Image 1 (tube, rainbow, N blue to C red):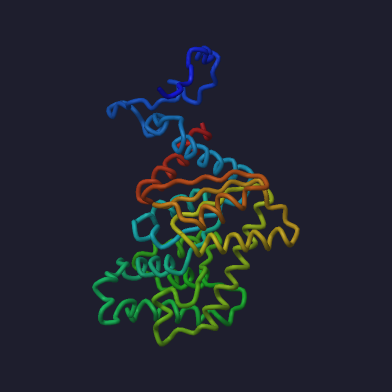
Image 2 (image 1 turned 90 degrees about the horizontal axis):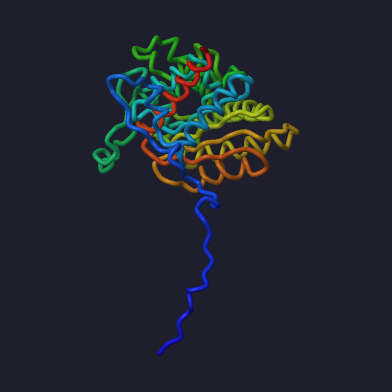
Length: 319
């Protein structure tokens, strides 16, 4: 017979003495579609885990607005491809976002949407014959615009594209984040890595121009990041590599120059847990003071939820 441990003397205590992380006051509640408002719907979420965190991020954005601290949106191309431009532009117009930073793929999709009303080619269908990314008009517009604005040393990549979309009176400029940032005098920066985008494979590409224009934008972005010494919020939506790296370097430069850029909030939104956004946006920048949050889910669901929370809280604060 094998030896057994005697359980008879195990010590127990009352659940009334225990610290519990969940109570029924935090539970979700059903809504009445005939009676409840959008605010009621958002308040019906359980006050637990990511639902609670999403409310916290929305509240932090309102706090940053009240203090005129930076509210930086970093975005990848998927934000445009799933149709979120109108929501981002609405937040810009309401003063919710103070800086938009995008990778150059996002800028391409934004420009194509503004100029032609379509974007996002079928890569699999055009890969075999080498025609992927060879749409003449896209390369001509972006590469030509950068070359045109290159001599004006005070203008960078994002500002040049936004100005040109406006100057050309693009048919769909009302859904162009680049153009609307220029109209609203909100910094918009484009961060390119040469060789990653379709406009880099076309004959009118000039590496020197592209590199200089995106470097100017890195300096503009650095100025916004330096403002985080007064607190603020940084959102990264759908950039797995480029913008997390750019943000970490800009933050390092700001601190190196003496800006006390600490005690701000960051949040990353993506469909899977990527290493660089988690480490370079959520964890490392906030380890000396601040808050970092991760949200996993489809952008076309998560970002409308966040936007709705922000707008409801703005409305509640104005009453």
